[in-house]
Image (cartoon, rainbow, N blue to C red; front, side):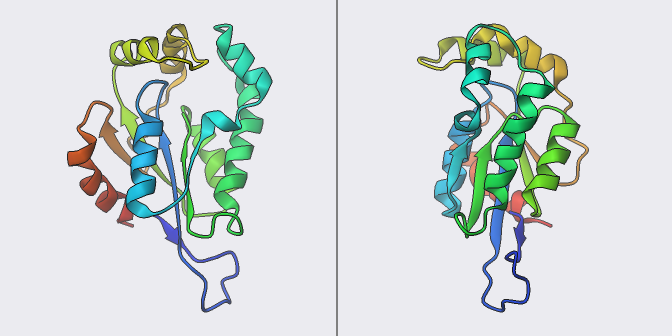
Length: 183
């Protein structure tokens, strides 16, 4: 996992912080994996869906994909959580689609930390099926294709670990944690 010194580098008692975004298209398992990482690493988890504006949620509920104007304030709210060493002294793990390179760069810039990403990779068919089976979520399966249309896979980025969205989490989690801890 990425660790960095507190925002007060002159403080010798400063704690290292863990900063991870679990990313991918809707239905890939970001929340499930994020909660598992949170428990294993004892670092708070936040579901990025909870940081969307009411307007963005309404737009998605109506089946309208978000655009950059909708996403940028949301990404900034996520970056603020990542950078908040006072509220989150151990760090933060956040589920966020982070579909484009520019979005990931914005999060890197806003977090003020050495940010790591865990990319959950899957097929459009798998994600449509998963999203269609969810109960009580505002994101309809019809928006999965729009997410794949803008997805810029992060696999060549040095701060990204990739995991299959259908991997057995109980078997993969220890390996994934080791990869996230590598610098």
